[in-house]
Length: 290
Image (cartoon, rainbow, N blue to C red; front, side, top):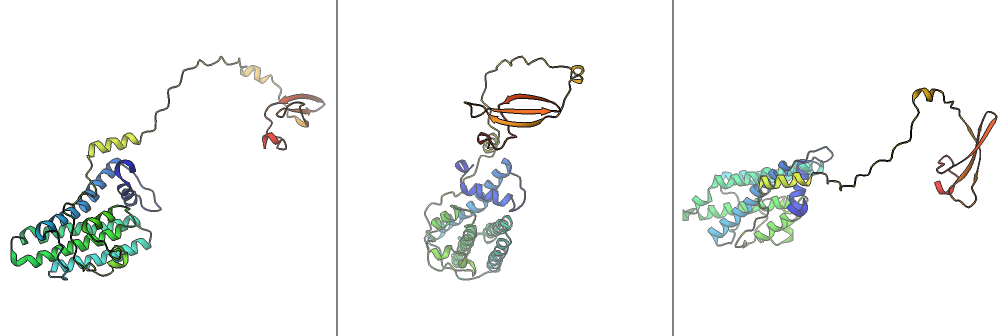
């Protein structure tokens, strides 16, 4: 799984679908769906679209954050702060799956924010340049907050997001930086061509691959060996004639020139018999059987 799909996709699915301390179900269909819809579409596409718009409308340089200029901005900022608080509560309660769901609500809402603010329309009106810049600033800040919150779960994606947005300050990668909105104050220049963080999977191909991987390995073909004829057994009538008695072990001694054989003397009533056994587990004092 990790070799083919990467550590982040595997960790995300397990932490999202298998609640901590409870049973969960792994399905190939569920894994591919989470990877495509949550990671590739929601998160990956959001990063890609934002960087592409900053390059297209501002030559790659992110405009400075100017605070909430619109009702939608206020809503986004409040949701981001609520997300951070809820995330901390979820983590304190060891509800890791719920914590991831909380982050993804912010990611989904940020994608919707793009559709609501229509940057491609604002870009056609020079008088809306400041508004457009503030939309970009809110997008980047929301992405940064999401990346910070995902650091306990994903080992590579947050780092890739910071690199593509060119957010290099370690302080802006820490949880303490998301307690207040708008911590990203310094100008940044994003990369020219955003790289897919989570490439989409070919659903049918990958589902079949995972199903095949889950099959138990086929046993090696063994040469058929003809079974030796079994010894003749007595039937129930003959068995009824057998006299079975409990015997008492009277003595056990080593057999000369052997470190495995014991000579047992056992008896019942007035008759005593002697015999040798190979595997006498009832004698724990023998070093060979300890």
